[in-house]
Image 1 (cartoon, rainbow, N blue to C red):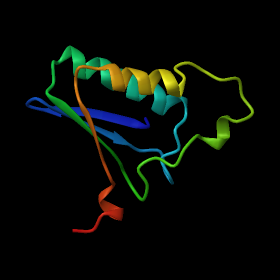
Image 2: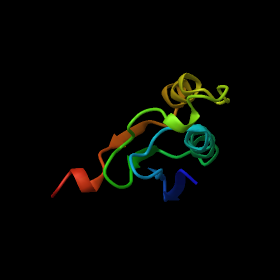
Image 3: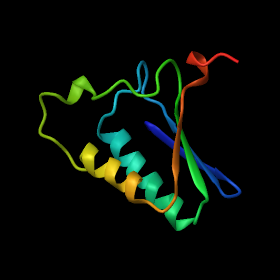
Length: 99
């Protein structure tokens, strides 16, 4: 799956994992929407979302360009994150953010 959701205490962690560049396709959009719902159901304090590998998310999945658009659409997913009472925080992948 393209999105992994887990929680530790009141913190949700969402990892985008669609190598090589975390392209946002149907599975990722659905996974993000599911993570919003789960974070709200668990009454989390916050969610941190990050990309695994070399990119946070590089845009649309080109493999879907010649197919009919499938719900959930990206604007709907982004609105769900924006309208959620659980704050979402984006973090750059560790591989591009050396410490």
